[in-house]
Length: 81
Image (cartoon, rainbow, N blue to C red; front, side, top):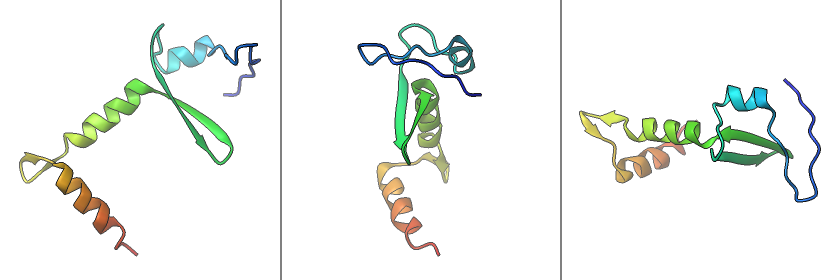
């Protein structure tokens, strides 16, 4: 889907209704903007938090994963070929 919108005098852009519906965005919803390779990507903050919360709830040997476990996983990931 590609939709063109004009940037207003205050730098604002209206998010088209179709996109708001697809992302379940309501008034006062928050969105996350990411800039990658000269492109701007937008996603619902709800989806972002939902993913993060699901990640944190990952269980390791019957217990919730800790920050120490996450750091260890990150360090070990650099050893992969």
